Amino acid sequence: MKNRTALGRYSQNFLKDQNTICKIVTEIISKCGKSVIEIGPGRGAITGELIRSGIDLTAIEIDKELSATLQTTFPELKIFNEDFLKFDLESIGMDNLFLAGNLPYNITKEIFFKIADNHKLIAAAVFMVQDEVARKFANIDDRRTALQTLTKFYFDIEYLFKIPNTVFEPMPSVNSALILLKRNSRSELKLDHELFKKLVKTIFQSKRKTLKNSLKNGIFGNIDLSDSGVNLQLRPEQLGINQLIILTRFLQGLQYDREQQSYH
Image 1 (spheres, rainbow, N blue to C red):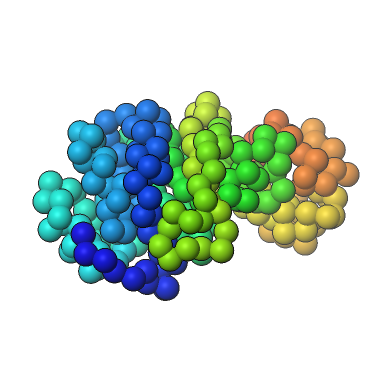
Image 2: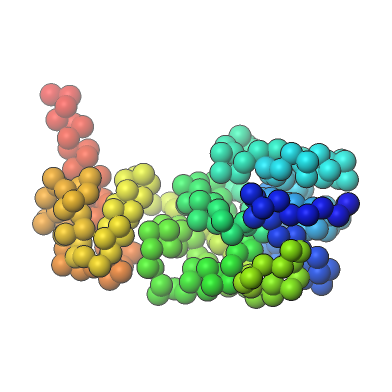
């Protein structure tokens, strides 16, 4: 594929080291099986190796020129020239999706929120992200943000290996890492995901406050949580998974009661 400078607006950094590419592809194949959706294939360094390995590959690439070049280079590739953040994953028509990709640093957060929102569709994902981000997400005891909490609630995360900045063109200022997200059994819980997400975002907006005070000024401010079974003097970082589940189910119960009353 022809040489092409990275487009700043998409924060593209292209892999150029063949050994690293092969190592990444090996991980994708072993973790994702025979059908993969690649996010942001760029110049197609990983794309080509996946196709040659016999993978049934679908690509989602926002850049129009790159999409056209990829389609010419790999005629067998099914490619969507779309923004992944706006792409409807249900349109693919599969229940267990396997994703892979070198995620742009500037939209990693938004992509992870989308992954959490679509946890019932996504079986696993192998992503390249900033090394610091990968280490924080892979740390079992580190649930310091709403995003980490939401993602780690639905997915077990494993740090695979570090990727030095020297293997990219242009060379970023930080190192990257490959991580695995594997859907866990909590995705089967009958929780209202939107309610759970609102709860987590609300309490982490004021994470230095106690749970009682952080919820007081949010959308849950008028709800009496004293009978929820959770210690409201805890701070968000002190809450365990089970306590988040209890709170969400308590709120779901109140919501159900209100809906039932509206019919009478």
